[in-house]
Image (tube, rainbow, N blue to C red):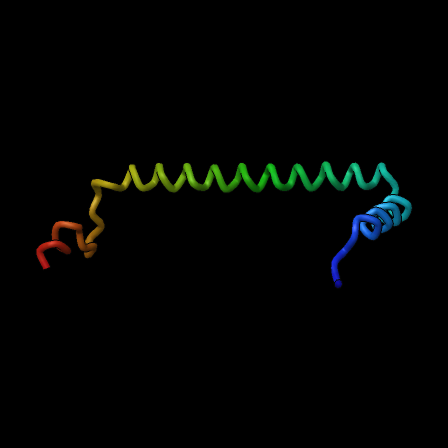
Length: 74
């Protein structure tokens, strides 16, 4: 009750193919795949950049910044 059967899904799929055509759907799928790939690459690059920044600034203390040793002493 209230569920979608396989026949209803097939009818919807058939209507989408008739309305948009297979070529347009193929292009849409390719564009969506490229967008997802670009997003994953950007997230991966951002993670690598932030790790490099953490490693580069690990021994540096900014004026007024509390170091871990000072936190432990307090």
